[in-house]
Length: 474
Image 1 (cartoon, rainbow, N blue to C red):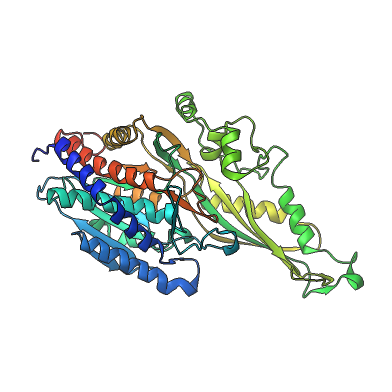
Image 2: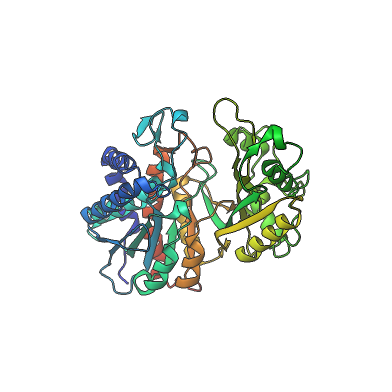
């Protein structure tokens, strides 16, 4: 492998970034203006437009890029081959689809008319995930345009279905293992603690989707004629859900915690380096108080403990005025966040069995399993992780802390299993970015620092692999 003067390359890259910072911001705004909402059929054309826009942009900066079909929304694939045949390969993953933006009336500015104010970009997808993966795109451009080449091979895999659970990507990865073969995967789809405190996520919770329907009648009936004579499905469903947790937030479902991975003392101590206080929680969410298992810290509850949450509940009449009925049925959407060693199918079955067993008389209960993904645990001690730590420390001026992330990135488990290489989760967002909420935003400073961190990581990968510190063992 040839010798790269990484100090000179970095200095040239930083100068290029400074010279083009306004253009980099304007290009991000253009990308954010595309309403690529994967959950809504009416936005299918917009999703495809976002894939085409990103493909053309990657091609414009010098990569071979194409839109590849899946069973659902397409993926964007791009690559750059370094001159050195022994150079390591970095696969960068992200997603160009975004969450629905409703309720629109709570946005200060339209979600797909990106606005810049007070050092932030406000738009749906700004932090999750267009801004974060676009920082990697700009890092690659910066190195290419200052050096004429890259010190490593780079591949991009940017999907359009992450916000709906990546239903097509697992099959895509299985069918394209050779195309995606690499030495590590870099993902930025999470948050750091602060602009001067980077975080490396080493665990992601898994996910189970369920929808519960409680039926009591053949059709809606008059609440005067039949009130007190028949079961009300909304009340029955509420009674069932109220029994799932105790007063301190522990899940009562038998066997729910059986397979949960326990934290060892060293890991609990490492998590304490990333203090997460009730004040932090209140500031980020507006919560009146912290809630949950008291024997675990907030940081542990957020990433090391499984959850049962009701995401939505509906039934009967909710329009204006009065409609005096007892509805025929009621519904709830439920998700469980899982931790390592929990099996999504087994958890779904335990939840369904419990709800059926506690259903009140006069009810018929249907539980539909909408899919799931297992939790992910990442080795914190690989050479690739050390390269990411050096890049983050140099960029942000502080050693990164390790955190367990409460959210899920469904494809990470598939990438880990099918590619068999180290994965780095280096978040560029901030806890108060309002991800999945109105007024989502992304710090311009975080965007620019993310570009620097990405460029440094690519240079570090080249340097560590040149010295034999490669893959899992070096």
